[in-house]
Every structure is written in structure tokens, then in C-alpha cells.
Length: 510
Image (cartoon, rainbow, N blue to C red; front, side):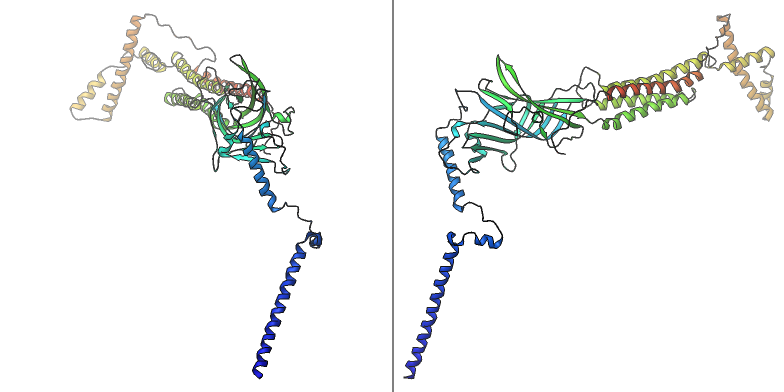
């Protein structure tokens, strides 16, 4: 009896627990239904949190629109033939161009070329991609093509006329992509290109020169009747404003040049009696001349000034003065060779060549001045043709005139007898020295005697004109050479500095 009562109580407890659990589950399900119903929640949740309702599209919209765009592109490609340009047989295709220069790699004077790295964009319309039957989202009405898909549609046959070599970038992916807008048929083709182009340079003002290089853009096979080029304006219209004619340059500095101007223009060229539309980018580079001032001009000035020290050295120090002049001449010749090592072999004189040539002339004139000084020293009171100084020769003449027997041999005999007897005294040594002097004087006088026999009458050389002595020539050169070099420098620097052109500010990084 009692067992049955206990069993019934347990069953009732289990039943009550199951009933409570079932009610709880039903209430939770009802609450979740109310929270998710938009008509019940309204904007209360957003208002309670102080935030605006979310404007993000439904999750399923992006996938539906992407599928629709892909289907639209594939449908357009079914009857698409990229061998034919847009508006084929109707009118010319207008292609707008845009260029953003990243940097200039180098400017090579010897090869007459320069390198440029830039973003290049082309804009045109292709009605074959217009599809207004689909309900595209306003912000997702285009499709991007990357890689090999870009080559599935027609592309303008754009070429860089003066390019020597060009390449696309492909790290980490191929740097080309194409965007197609299905509502208007607008196509934008972006790419990153590095090219090396030819540039004809005029180096007459080197190293104070300003070089202008061009990049000519044309169609390879379409003349102006089938394709026209213009520069794209940010407003979407053709480029007409002054600011539109300037090209954006990100990095305007190079090791030896500054980019001072980057402009764009359009023109027409003629090949085989056919006119082609052309777009041209013009870049102006100004050389940085401070490098050459420090490395060439200042050393050259110092070398010329070293030669002026020879004017303060006595003319008798021939090795010193000759060594200074010859060394400076060889130094300037070496400097001229190094400067022109990487320059093209042009037929005109460059500004730097002119300066080094004039400096070479000043150094050479200092050597010629020393030759003139030696000539004056010999001809006017210096040395006769036997290499004997004239004052010493005049002294011998006077001595012979007053004492004809001054070179007798008694002293020699007595000295010799004493030497034979082994008696060498100070008197003996003195007489031996006297004999040597007398012998030298006799030789010189004998030479003069023979010379007199050949030329009975000796005419004395005239005195040098005032200011033409070797000392006077050096004194004049000490002032004449520096003044002449300073006058040349003033004229040189004024001539090349005053012709520098001022340029307008460029579009680029501030």
C-alpha cells in the first residue's frame, strides 16, 4: 500500500517537471518571434542604443548582383569580336589618356635617353557592353577584369613612338586591370608602365643646361579618321584648362636633375600621307649644377692659383717652376678627360669645356712666361754662350789688364819640388789652389782670345728696355694673371647665371 503511494508521488513529480520545461520552451520561442518581427520592433532598438538604423543591404543582395554582372558580361561576350573597334564603320573612337608619373629613373646623356615609371589610364566607350534591361545597384554597375581577362576585349593599339624599351609590372600580380560600366558602356583601362625613351639633348650650356624630353603617344594602325586621342580632364570633359595641361609628378628629384615642368598637349603627325592623332607629354629637367661647382670648378680655380706661386720663385730655380707648370697642365688635361668620359661626342663646345680650356690657357701662359724670363736672364746680363757668368768674365779681363803675369808657374814648380821631398806645407797647398785658379782663368781667357780672333770687334749687348728684365716680368705677371682670370670668371658666371629660366610650380607632392 505504502509502496504504491510512493511510486505515484514520484510519477507526479516527474510529470510536473516536464510540464514546466515545456512551458518554458514555448515562452522562449514566442519571445524570439516577437524580437525578429520588423513591424513590432520598429526603430525602438536603435533608438534605445542611440544609433541610426543600419543601412547595409541584405546579405543576399551582393551575391545576386555579382551573379547578374557576371551573366551580363558573358552575354555581351557571346556576340563580341575584339578584332573590331567600338563604333566600327560609324565614327572614330575617342580615347582619352591620363598619366601620373611616379618617378624618373635616370637621364643618360651619353645614350640620349631617359627612363620613366608611370601610371597610364585610357578611357573610351564601347556600346556593345551597354545593358539597361537589368536592375543594377547604382554603386555596383561595373565589373573589373584582371590578368588574362583584360585581353578578351578590344584595346586601343597605343604605342610610345620614341620609346626604346617598355614593360608592364607584374609583382605581386600583373599591374593591369580594366573596368566596364554596363549602364554607359564606359571602359577604363589602367596599367603601370616603365619605359626608356629617346631624348634629344642640347649640351651647349652643360652643366647649367635645361633639357626637355618628350613621350609621344599614338595609335599604331588607326589614323585620325578612326581614332582620336585627347587628355582626360578630372571633370570628365576634354582637357582645356591650364591646370589640366600639367601632369602630376610624385617624385620630382633625381641625383643630378630636378623636374621643373611636366605638360601635356595634342597634335597631329603625318606618315605616308596619312594623318594620325597624337598625344604628347613634355618633361623639362634642370640640372643640379652645385655638384660640378664643388667637384670641378673650385678645384680648377685652385689649380690655376697654384701656377701663380711660380711668379714668386726665383728664375734660377728652374726645376721648381717647371714642375709646377707641367704638373698643373697634366692635372687639367686629366680633369677634362674625366668630365667628358660619360658625355656624348658632340661637335660643339660645352660651357664646362670652355672654362677648362681657358684655365688651361692660363696655366700654359705661366709656363711661357717662365721661358721668357729665362731668355731675358740670358740675353741681358746673365750667361754667355760658354755657360760662364758674364760678371765673372769681366773680372778676369780687368785682372789680366792690370797684371799680365799673374799666372806664372813658379808657384807650381816650388810646390811640386816640395811635394817630391815629402814636405807639404800650407804654403804648398795654397800655391796649388792658386795654380788651379790660374789654369781656369787661362782657359777662359784663351777662349775669349780665340773668339776675338774670329770676331775682331766685340759689340756689347744693349741694356734691356725698362720693365723687360726678368724681375720686372715676374712682377707684372703677379698682378696681370690674377686680374685676367678674375675678369674671365665674372663674365663667365654672369653670362650663364642670367640666362636661367623661371618655371611655374608643378603638380606633385608638396
